[in-house]
Length: 470
Length: 141
Image (cartoon, rainbow over all chains, first blue to last red; front, side):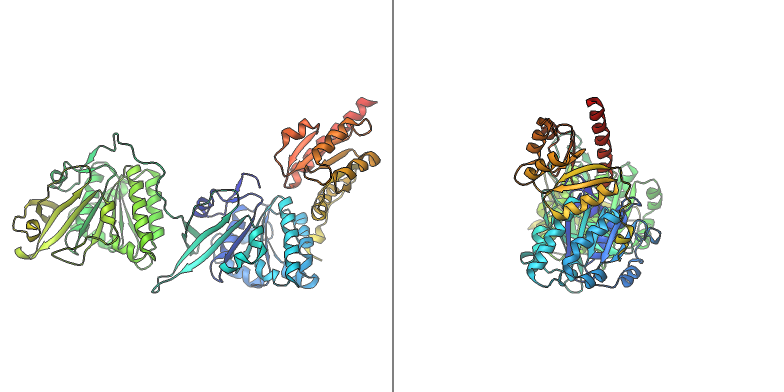
């Protein structure tokens, strides 16, 4: 194998594989039926195929060729004009059925010499290899195929409905240069797809499970978020303060938040979390700091009603590209996808303020609580490195008193924690208290939080508060 | 008949003999196809010792060798070919999976090409080696 890489045609998967498949490698894509194996292999074929060096897609016994092509046409990457010219489909099952499995190396040699493909896909190789008369024949034929492919300039993909148990039993997993496993995980109807690089010979791959989705565009992969390898330096501008945008709040946290810090805004429904966060973005945008609002509850129309009610022209800010609204329905939303899209925006360097509203929605769509906490930690580290100041809201069930802010150590990860609540003692007034600030002094008293037609502001200390006496 | 069989190699013989040292029959089949398609007459040896004997016997214009061949490695073979009066005019292409261009040139090879086999660079380099061989023969006269 050379050091060069062959793109899979899927940006996120190329990242996971360290740039794509190694050139001239022999790769296995495994998974149960319906996992997305063939879509992935076809996407790769259409991405790389040229007239001079086409991609050969050899079907076997998992699906008739005709049916296979009919199904493939529903994806946007499938270009019918390329079929027969750049992407060559052949039924490998037919000649193997006539001549026997032992003839596979000779048949592949004919395909390679006649068509000079740079990509060779056999789908399904598992179904084909089941025609071997003995395990010995299976192993020897596979060895010859591997020898052939190692000596010819093409990158091969063997698709198969293998289970994870097969990895310790079948010789193809020892011979293959890479093994990519596609899986589905579900809980309470929350069905999500993940892929994992089980093996990648002689090169780096991103560890762990990476989420992916299948749409009419094909496969999109969302690489698992890892913490940055470097940390922010303690120098300007990381030692700058940014205004919270909320009148009366800056003095409570020593003139604003540190740039690149993360603030958790926790409180019950209706306490003013979203309003405070939106105002943080709106005021930031007016000061020239582009902001991103990631929301899972209010759709764009509902959010527009709220902001218009305060006289904020968010459409104008969107046109100026200093405000962006990223809405995801909490029903279809996937933690990995949201994290990946936020990460992309941060990497682009066009965002200086971010609001995630609310963490609970993300948590509910996570299949693993540790994974959720890991994601939030990684994101906050990236925010710090890229000097993006973040507010994350978290909804608490209790209206008046709180025993714990979150169960996921999120409050430990946050640089600042603002606690919002209602006071039953005074006609359900809203209050705000700064529970924690990292690297700054803060006013520990509970203050009134006032909502008016102009937005949110922090008022006088709430001396009668039960919690402030505790 | 498959479409691959139907296509077949387009052969234009120009009577240049290439001796290829390759131990694996499957790879031999692959190399034969592309060399014959490019118009070469092709003979094979499956190890370094028999390659040396065949080279003395056949006097090919070109010898193509992998480094990793049995009994005598391709670089030793190359050194011997270049040291013997009866074989030194044979042009040698070291065609290997190993990244060993420097070692091949030190051993006296006329060219080095890294595997895997890709038709265009192989045919192009063989064309240059044929021209070099013809020049050697002219200079000898």
